[in-house]
Image (cartoon, rainbow, N blue to C red; front, side, top):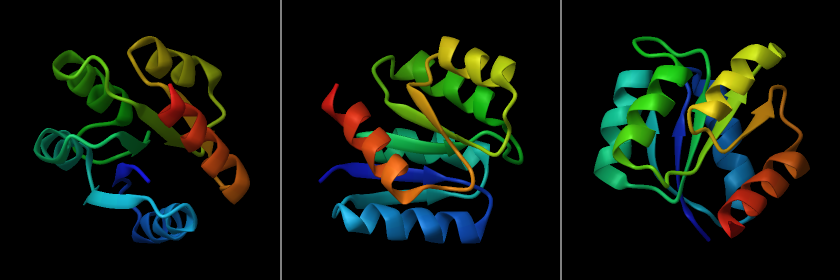
Length: 120
């Protein structure tokens, strides 16, 4: 069980992620609805893992990754994206993102990715 934070502007996506995380009994320590809130809550809760949407209001996923990694270089961040733009995904990974998962979600793939990242 890990302490995980979810940052996505969609209530429906946050609900789906909560359901997926419940399968492995993960503890959700916080939920952010925009990028600015994600940075603030990450500092407050210091989760084991952040699930972060790429397209967010106020601050996009890339900016959030850069700001969090600047303060917490060992942070584990999994990008959530509906985009298949490999240039954008690569840029986020180069800036410190740990991995990414694509929407729509495959429950098994999400849990495997989370387990793999938490094991590092």
